[in-house]
Amino acid sequence: MSIIKTTRVWNGLPVEEYTNVSTGVIELRSLSFLGIQGDLLATGDNTGRWSYNNQERFLFIYNNRQRTQGRPALTQSEFNRRFFTEGTRLFNNDRANVLNTETNYETYEIFENNTAAYATTGVPGVRNPEDGTVNNSEGSSVSDTSNNDDEAEDLGVEQGGNTRRNTDMSERNFGSNTRSFRYPIGILPNLDYDFIQFIACDYRGASFTGGTTGQFGGLTAEGPEARVGTPRETITLPMIPSLSESSQVVWGEDRINPLQVMAANIAGSVLAGQAETGFDLPAAVKQFADATTAEATKLLNDDGLKNFIVSYFAGQAAGGANILGRTGSAVNPNLELLFTGPSLRSFNFSFKFRPRDPDEANMVRSIIRVFKRNMAVQRAQGEKFLLTPNIFKIKYLHNGNPHPFMNRLMPCACTSFNVVYTPDNNYMTYADGSMTGYDVNFTMAEIVPIYADHHLQAGGTGF
Image 1: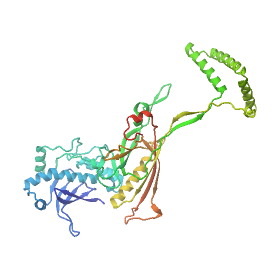
Image 2 (image 1 turned 45 degrees about the vertical axis):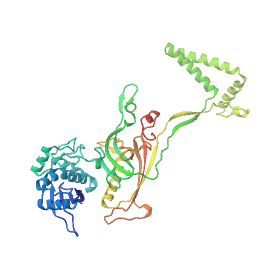
Image 3 (image 1 turned 180 degrees about the vertical axis):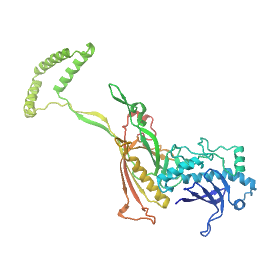
Image 4 (image 1 turned 135 degrees about the horizontal axis):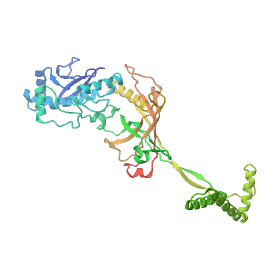
């Protein structure tokens, strides 16, 4: 699997690209015929330089294709300029897509080591896994990847190498430096369907500020993104048939009887008085006793409340017996439904993976591993402490943008992840051992509650 074959149509000319993930070298060949490999036309080495292997043959088949399309043939110098600028830019993109895809390597360790080496030697478009930067053909990270002046074009023609700085990896990383995985394999977001994106991020803990209050800083000040750290990996999957949300707030029944109301009134009166004059414990005890005596006298002068008080305390003395109820009456509990706090939502996702070729089988395997690795508990150095697993940002996307008619989600933790390797109770594999299907089910739970002000800045249908 060290050599990956891809096909590119350049100005109407189809060519075959052979990228060696072990060396970073790419070869361009004419199309194969009856199982016979085509002619070797040009090679791009692992320092970003290109050179011809069969210059005359390359020019001949290019001009032949131009004539069939009613276009003028090019001279050798014209072809050089076009190939070493426009052509190599496209071929470098294709090579970078192959080298930056983890599933094209035997293990993640090989992927990380090789891409780090290619980033050092200067293979165009290869992402450095250590810092997320992308190198040009000179081995340095660039921000503008499309501009190329006349002097740079001439230099490329003279040297036989490509100097165009190209890091256009939008088909791979969707504008971020995270490693990307997608199913089904295709150019996203230009596929003709909406999709779901899961972005695994480091969990950022709160900072303990110390002091007498012992507060943890950060969450209130920074909002719902306070726990979201550096993004690591992005998984893009198609929409599923069952998508729903359910918002809940915790309310509970609450009761308060006349004696409790009396005690609350007395306590409130005493505390209010102490707040004005300064707290004096002996005075507060005396004030509380005097107020209790006055309220008790008032209640005992009321025949109805007198019977309640006598029955209540008699029942308490009898182990909580309902003496008042046996007299044929009940105290008004002042029952009311009261707010007690927010709640956290959870979402269930279910995907059916049916890989159609070895590349998709490898991609599905990587996606499963990425989910499992990010939800797993981490160990601190020395193993004296455990670290919080990574969390996920989840987006519903339409045409590559947040879906305008669906809900938003807070950062989530993956609380469970289940894989069925025998869907429909049937064990089947391809020749290389990869499963013909996987059913994956997992649960994501939001790590912070939703408040009313969050909806003010949310798009779609809100959170």
